[in-house]
Length: 499
Image 1 (cartoon, one colour):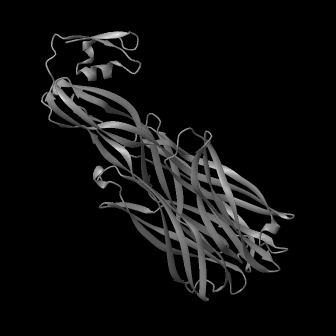
Image 2 (cartoon, one colour; image 1 turned 120 degrees about the horizontal axis):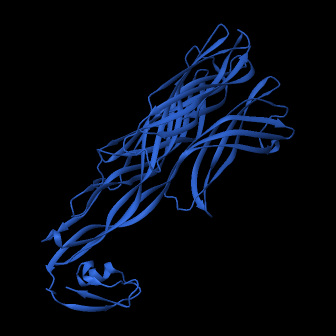
Image 3 (cartoon, rainbow, N blue to C red; image 1 turned 90 degrees about the vertical axis):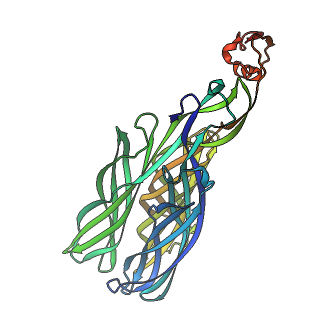
């Protein structure tokens, strides 16, 4: 904060400038290259959506992103194949009260997008169209100038000011450089290949050490191996990494909190002589949150002039939660509730997790959403797809109302097994969680000084104290300094005012 001598406080506070959920639809036509097998029947399409790019452009926020699809299908030979596809999306959001913010400095935009649904229409063995309904959550925080504005003041030395103290939350986010990881895996035989692969990022630890943020995690690569067009096994490979970054504007001391989400932005697999060479590019989104102390003007008057103060209510954000969470989902569902093929065997499972609600309920933050599982089943030599949706819920200790949240989830290591007439689900959920509250604070925004007060020198007043009185409001009522009041309003029946 910057002090303007004795006249007041000039400071830039982090304030919410936008908080919206944007629904959009995209449609894209694709033609599979010749090196992919032809499509006989689509099983499902899986969406993986990295954190989009965000820019401040004029008085709006531009969001540009890409949806990475994995098309999983039965090929012309009756086996399982997959093909990576991608489509772009973009939208713009207006900034609320743009004149209040310094748009060229200190703006943080948090955004992530999920696909609520996708559909595929195949028009030819290599031609298809994918339609998706996207939901993007966007929160933006900017620097708002907060200062006292005076008009008509004749003498700076006549001003009496009552200061207050509060806290204001600040969120700063940055993306890391690309981290390239490599791996090699020996297939069961040279006749085997890769039918399907996906990658996710697991953050084991993130911490602030001095001026650096140190991160340790793994890229988890799952490979569906097929031999002679028959699914054989799912192989999980873990590629560890370490990274570090620094973020301007966040102090290493105090209550700074860090969360990290990661995405495999590019996964390349090359099969040669019975071995799979993997190259995975990982990008990390690092967000640091901190509640910083704020000193502000609660009230003001002049001992020489009549004055009137105009107040403004600032909705200062508070960081309630900003961390990574990991937990397991264990559930069971009857086969009769699903369109599960009789006698079918589960040969592979993928899934997506979405958290879309956060509420305060009886001293807990309740985070909720859903998890979608895509099961590839084999029945009498034919592959089919079964989709299962299950609710998700996670609880955190909490005691303040939630103003906004950013919840970026990923389902890892999903395991589904058939147990008699039931399906058992056992999965790991990793969640990058930010929950923000609100600290409403009234601050003096403008003071108008008028005519001079009557000369009260050598006057002597006895004032009988009421329960609502304190030394400040008594001094303000009579236009004197606190030092002119003799006595203690909190303990004495009356005080004297001498000038």
